[in-house]
Amino acid sequence: QRLALMEKSPGENGSTYVLIFHPHVSTPLDPFQLNFHFYNGTKPAGATKENLMKRFYFEKQNKTLICFQSLLIRITFLQSSSHSLEIHPFGRKKKEKRNSPFELLVNPTPSSPSPFHSAQFERAPRRVCSIPNNFSGPDVLGVVGHLALIEDDEAARVISWHLRGDMDCVITRTTEAARSIYADTHGNQQVMPLDSISNYAAERPLPHTKNGRALFPTAGNPVYARHLLICPKEKQICDTVFKNLLGETIVMDDLNSATNYRREVLRNQAFCPTILTRDGNRVSAKGKFGGSQNKAPRIEGLQVFSAPFPKRYYALKEETDMLLEYFAALTKKEKAEEEQRNHLKTLESPEMMQKQEQVTQMKMQLQEIEKQLGEIFFCPAAVMDGKNQIVFCLFFFLTKPS
Image (cartoon, rainbow, N blue to C red; front, side, top):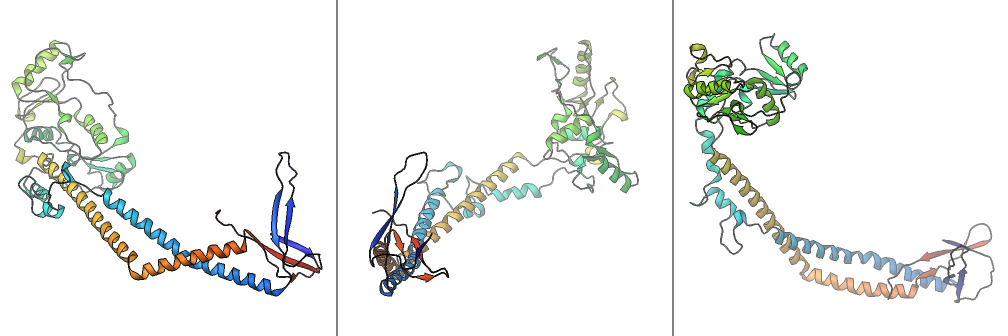
C-alpha cells in the first residue's frame, strides 16, 4: 500500500494516528481502524531501520528451525516405514525364528526346497514343437504349432496329426499382415488373418447331452479336443483360432468307445463330429475309420505341440517370486532403519544441539522485535516523488496471536 501526505501536513512527532474506514455496502459492517506511527526525524527512522534489519536477519536464521522440523518429520516417516515393512513370509508368526530370504534361496531347508530347483525342470527333456517360428511383428500372432501346449502325450500326438496341415500356418491379426507375409515368401507360406475367420461365441455341449442331461451312458471319457489345449498367451484369441481349426472335434480313449459313442449319438438324431482317439485312430464326421489315412503315425515322426512344464515347476516359480519380493522388502526395511539411525545420530550430535539452542534464542529475539514493530508499521522515511508530496511506505506484518 502507498499513502501520500502533502508537504508540511500537520502532525505530532512520535504520535499514533488512526485511519477509520467506513464501508458503504448493503451488509452492515463495523468500521475498520488502521493504526500507524508518525515520526519526523532521522533518529527514530534509523532505530526502526535497525529493527527491520534485525527482523530480516532473524527471519533468515529462523529457516534453520524449519530444517529441524523437516528432519523430525523425516525420522517419523522412517520409523513408520520400518514398522510397515515387517513382512513375515508364508504366514509365519512374528516370534518364530526364520532364516533370511537369501539363505532360503541359496541354502534351502527340507521343508522349503530351493525355488532355483525350478531350473532343473527347464533343463529336463520334454516335448517341444520343432516347427520354425520365424515370423514376428505387432500384427503377427505366431505359428499354430507354437500357440498352444498339450500335457498328454497321446492327445498331443493325435491332435497334432489331425492338424498336420495347419501346424505351420501363421496367424495374423490383420489381412494386410497376412498379405505381407504371403508376398515376402512368394506364396509359399500359408497364413490366416483373424479378421477373416468366424468367431464362435456360443459353447455347445457335447452331443450326448441335451438340456443339461445325458441322453445315454458314455464310456471313453469324451471331451472336446480344443479343451485339451493350454494357451499361455492371448488365450481368448487362441480359443477363437482353435475353434475354427478343430471345430467340434472330440477326443476319446479308444476306437471301440468312439464307434459306440457315434452310434448312440446318431440313434438320438443328433450330429456327431469327428472323433479322435488316444490310441491314434480317427472316426470322421461321416463315420469313416480305418486305413492309413485315419491312423496317426508314431509321435517321433510328427511335428507336435509342446508340452507344458510340470505343475511343480509353476509352484516353485510362484515361491521364487514370493521370496524375491520378500527379500526386496526386507532390504528396503533394513535400508530405512539404517537411514533412521544415521539421522538420529546426526540430530543428537553436539553441533546440532548447539544449533538448536541458537535457533531457540533467535526465535525469542524475533518475537521481541515483532512486538516492537507492531502488527502494522508506518515507515517515516520521507521521499520526494517530484510532486511536492512526501511518500511514505506502509508495511504490514502478520504476527501470531498471543
